[in-house]
Image (cartoon, rainbow, N blue to C red; front, top):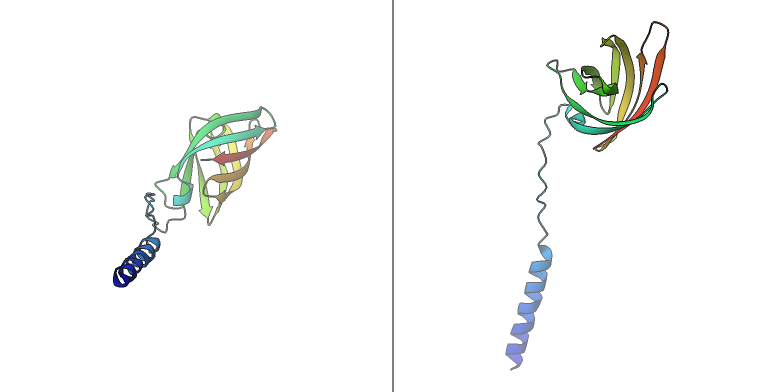
Length: 139
């Protein structure tokens, strides 16, 4: 009887140690890191924008790669049905001055974390008027 008790105790101890050493597997699917600095900006983003001219607005933009490996493309920024290109350096990006639909865009921003981008940009709407825009993009 004593041997049976020792055997049962040893089996329970072994099972407890064995099962507690197992961890729950992580089934999250992540894309492989290719080393491309632009990759972390990709996706569909919700924009909460504050424009001096138009006030608050909410809409979506899509950020994707350009055919030029130095740029990312913002589709639908400022409500335009065009793409605006930007250069990436680490978690920062810069929108060089460019004319889109008769307006001149320029600005910059920063990826705060994998789900948030903070940005400020200017839109020259006439030869003498600029709209100043701040925006928070979230996934």
